[in-house]
Picture 1 (tube, helix red, strand yellow):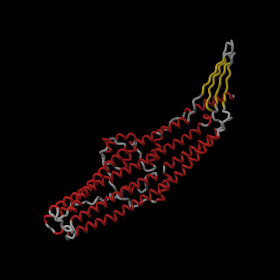
Picture 2 (cartoon, one colour):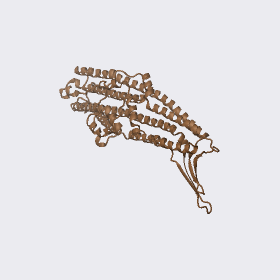
Picture 3 (tube, rainbow, N blue to C red):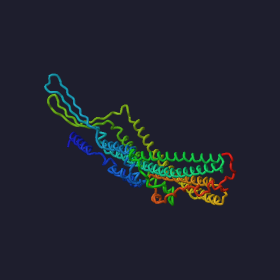
Picture 4 (cartoon, one colour):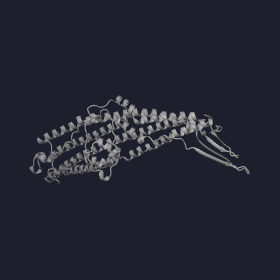
Length: 487
């Protein structure tokens, strides 16, 4: 086959091959789901959006809440939609630029025929390196998929933290309500003692102030519940009429064993999707830099065919080739820019790797500190406070103290339990941050799911119901400082 026929044939074959490129299947959503499943996070099918209201009618587990967030959260939906941009890049990388059609017409004097030249050409660089450009676009598309998967994992960690905050806020509200009721009982009892002449005005004011303060604390606890529920509903993407949900999982005690830091670092380096995305981006930059070096002398080159009709009616045709002459721009700027971009991408991978190690170590330390705080409350402070209440109760039975000392001891015991709830909340928040740092579900997660529910708050019984009333004129009812004659 002659040269002028070989070029058109090759051009047609290349055009047909380029025309076969298509958008990635389902825009990569299935690949994202597989990456998440390998990290312990199952993704719901989009057809399940209609089931959300049914799910909300039952007590909401943490796993179910995460499923709803993956379906409804608008920020994640926007991040997922960006896969369309990367898919479009893959599609366009596998296709040639539109061919350039040229035509010229010239007439000479009284000649009966004019000279007509027709030509069609395509970018030779695109034609030669279409496969390489497709590989680069595939790498960038994989980077985009990994970014979306990492966003889903981040959302799961945020949902878990919001879930724990709601559970802790509701327990604190219950506790503060109990404390408020106990303080009101104490204030009512103090008023009776004062009316009977067995209590000074200062002690009465102290009890009344304590009752008011307890009411203020209960109000703040209710506000904390409302704010935590609102933040949780926003994260799940729930409408205003979908916020009558309840939680199925109260705060639980820590699991029996924690994960080892060294093993978690190894897991993180293998499973962190943001680290994998940084690596894939660096690979794409390296491929693009290599392609730039190969094509620096071919930039703007075109290949095509021309057909020319002469003045005498004769027809001529053949191949055409266009090449940019590197007289002014030798491509050094593009090479320097590509090399700098590659160095930045490689440095970003190293920085991300160091961040992963630091994040896991820091999150592990936070979990250890929070667990120690939980243990100190549960094993030391709360038992000590309960012992004080027990001993004060015995002293009251022997008329060695008054009823207000017993109520004060019980308030301190309840406050210690409030600190325990805060520590327990901080522990589960730290575990959520640790899972985020590792980039997958923690190995101890099954043990954590089966851990025992934290003990209920100690009830502040109505001590006054079992205590001597002022009208009994019992000596033990009189404070040790004596009775103020002025009421």
